[in-house]
Amino acid sequence: MKTNQELKDIVKQKYSEIALQDKSTNQASCCGAGGRSTEVYNIMTDDYSSVNGYNPEADLGLGCGLPTQFARIKKGDTVIDLGSGAGNDCFIARTETGEDGRVIGIDFTPAMIEKAKDNADKLGFSNVEFRLGDIENIPVSDNVADVIVSNCVLNLVPGKDKVFKEIFRVLKPGGHFSISDVVLVGSLPEALQKDAEMYAGCVAGAIGKEDYLELIRSNGFSNSSIQKEKPIVIPGDILEKYLGESELRDFKAGNTGIFSITVYGEKSKSCGCATECCS
Image 1 (cartoon, rainbow, N blue to C red):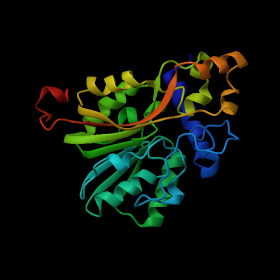
Image 2 (image 1 turned 90 degrees about the horizontal axis):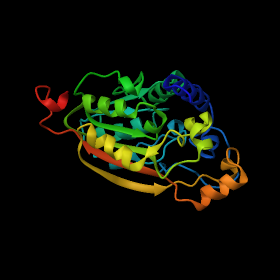
Image 3 (image 1 turned 45 degrees about the horizontal axis):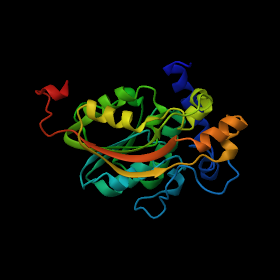
Image 4 (image 1 turned 90 degrees about the vertical axis):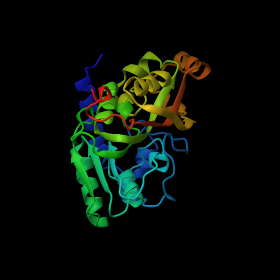
């Protein structure tokens, strides 16, 4: 079993490569991570093209939802995007916050940060910035964000509990998050769980849906809800790389489900630094 740091290194290397790939290559694989499928449909992504603020150069086809669509962003808000990639969700969020707002993208892949900054420069946005950092230790002060969004990223992080603790720390009292992510119902076959490429591809790093929701509740968030849910079907030609004939047959006939969910949660207005819920 690989260590958390080894898993992070795998993800960083893979997403450095993805930063240089075109969108069509990324969309035809599991979050861009190899195993190109010959079947003609996208595995994870939702269509952003009609969303205000959409920038084709910033869309690498790596998401599994549209969290900004559900994030209730208001004019003047400070928004943080965890795992901001080439900046697509940040630019959409900036359309919602307006010039008086602020958007901060966090990513731990230098190639992604460079690509996002180039895209921001082309758009001339002075209130969108990108910071290199690990979302298990978000490089932002306490109580800064009105809204946090993230798109198909937490499933790549071994320390999901730590990420939710960081989200709670960074949100202002009364702030909220909207996160799109991959979760499971049932268990993946062992070959998929252990494969590093499938981890970088957003699948092997996913945890159970109920475990995911419990992490949100146990970290002090209130009014949590699933805003959207959709099944994800991994094409057979990708699965065949990892599973034998009998394993593949059992997997397809079994009760394991892979889903994209967009989930919402709030930090209570009473959670100021003098109260127990900040600890």
